[in-house]
Length: 179
Image 1 (cartoon, rainbow, N blue to C red):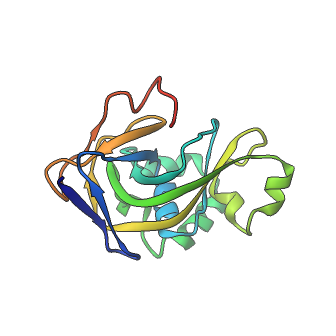
Image 2 (cartoon, rainbow, N blue to C red):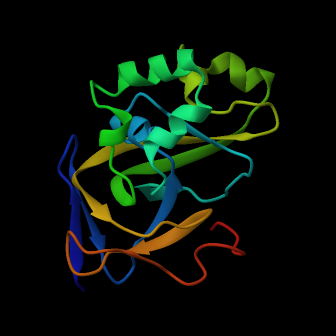
């Protein structure tokens, strides 16, 4: 079985069998980098998932500078503090940038909101009725790996070694239930 070694950045190395691939989630920048780098613990979505386990974090191809238009100035200032001096335009896009373990999916209600750490509420859409996906063991890759993204949770299989472009596996995106 051929394998690809990912990681080595801030934590332990991870080995993923090429034949199996890994589940992946596409997230717009700067939220993808904030999740992989650690200040962001939750990704908020309008839908729940039953999937738990390792997941690759894919930074969407959307240009981060366009994101500035939808972020309120005080939230943007909070985000910039967590990016360690990097500009939005310098963040990688269209790439797998790290891995994490998806450990829980919480319905957002008043009880959940009261449990959020200071500042976390600025890093997502915590409207009651949405879902907060909880991540642990975030690991940044030393170098982003170019990959096409997908909607919902999708299957990513690296091609051509460490820097190959990954493909979205059939059945891993639209119209499929998250496993």
